[in-house]
Image 1: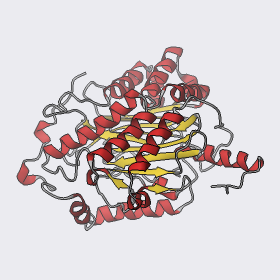
Image 2 (image 1 turned 90 degrees about the vertical axis):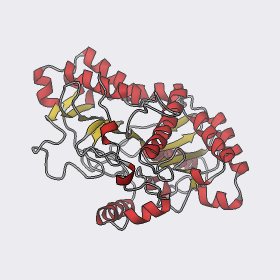
Image 3 (image 1 turned 135 degrees about the vertical axis):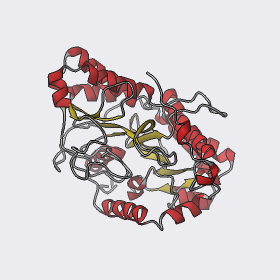
Image 4 (image 1 turned 60 degrees about the vertical axis):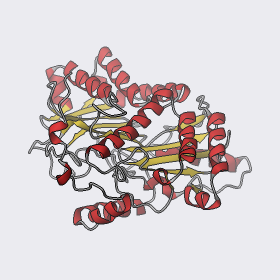
Length: 416
């Protein structure tokens, strides 16, 4: 599959709107623009609502998630997090550490704008401390997941170098938070977020949840510099296209909602200036997303396996035990899974697709340029997200169950 050339869309230094800016100055300047102010105001309003979870109709389906051992690397995670805590000053702890049921879990966002006043901003911390943060990620994620996360960060620096804004778009332009006390048995977690990256990891003993998980890149590969050869989202792009192409014409009539991601036939408001076609992005924790497209009951055995193989790629950041448990969960609900597509089917087409079931919500979306100058969506700017609908993003449903069981057995922790 050929890759389009992003080089014609790299702005000359004189035209780069953020060249030389600092992160705080850039954020301040952008928030003077009405569109950016409105976006953050909308997000703030969404965050005022109590957490419910993504649903298809506003009603949360109960009984989907259970506390069970899944082989999460709890001991290694707790050890790495304890080493990080040992290196923090009291002021850093106050900035980065919060209760496990804190509302700040939901305050991640994937823009380049550094507006947060909480958390550890990694580019403001010494390398030794950054290494300890990365050790927490390495202990929590699969080797592939850690590689993907670092690749997003590397491509962010590559973009910053392209547009002359290394202080806005850098390898370490990310915020880290710790929730709860690191433990082998009790709930705790961590969060890392910034441009094109948001990881939310809750662990309860041998069980973990790693959603919302936002991964993106502009451009999605580096052709020069220290990270030349880094590429992301090729499998997700190719396998998604292979799946929709495998559908019969009758199946495609169900699955393909529109022939172009810029189609005038899309419903009013379906395209968003920041999220494009993505529905489950930042602060969309309670969004109602009706099922669309082709149900799993209408897929052949080969197509169902292709769908599962595609889902497995999105779950690759999970370590082996939680990955296997999550895949089993997805497979149990395969008949209730829907696959929808917007866009063309050619090798050069741009597109959006969504995989949605009671237990998983996945989106892939090609975007127009933000820092590059392409006005139409292109295959070198990609956003993806994985969520756990029906109340278990951030592991919140499991957290409630954990405290309910503790209460029944005589614990005194309040329901979060």
